[in-house]
Length: 381
Image (spheres, rainbow, N blue to C red):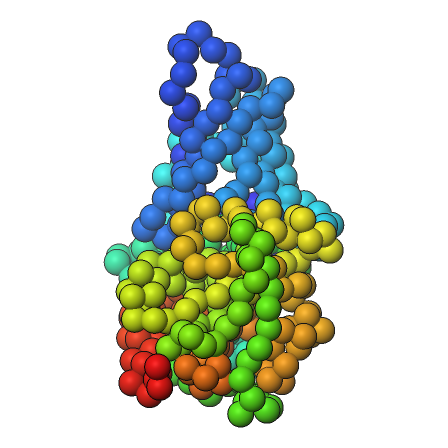
């Protein structure tokens, strides 16, 4: 991808779908596997005319690229949709690439593995946990509101190069180890001018407690709403007779929301067996309710979501206040609200540490389970 900071590389594999051997490429679909950290995310693409059409799972984004005559390169655009308006990022790819970045330095890579803490642009505290094996780097950027998912790359002498692309977001992280021991550089998304960052080594650095960031008013009142399930059209309500309720505020446009959805879907059978209700409130970046429901259904199918999902409006203050009037201001998606057996808000968790954060992800799961046990222990049902 072409960004203001230069090329943002990512790796993917294209394989033919099974089918009649005599079929033309234009009549065939392809399996595409996008590298996302140590995993490969599979989707399906197809050739339309002379172009590859590759829609990404769940996200409202698609990669459209012309196939070269020899079939060894692609040139086109990555299209993203936000509030029904598209944006395009130039894209090109070549067959045979195994590495995202090439080493140019004649010196050994500096050692930067470990935890770094600092600012990601003005007013944004961030952590940069890095794992280094020789020149190879992996890690992510953590903020109080979530993480930048899987970033991989290399240390080339004193220069840091990392990138990540998941179909919904894409980041290029460039930096240098300065003589004073700090890491300094720029981070670029697919669009925009980029932001400066500075980090210092700090093995004890922590982010604010995600359970202490939300501000509530009228929390003594039970949370009440009724919204229709996107599939059954039945009314979904929080609170009794459930012993506890998990309210997930999400959007299909939000990568960390997908991480949380996958986690909640995996533990839902255990939660349900203990009388815990889970409701997903979808706040979609579209003015079309029908399209919003389609997006949520794609999410539901992708992660086999067993709990009810409802369309709660757009991710703006009016929609949020209408559904959750006790929440003074939503600071991040996802935000997860835990209700006791009477329907009152007991805990609010801001943001989500996804699998890319490693130990932070594991600690978050442990604390969540502890909160659930506390609610069940105090249940009057």
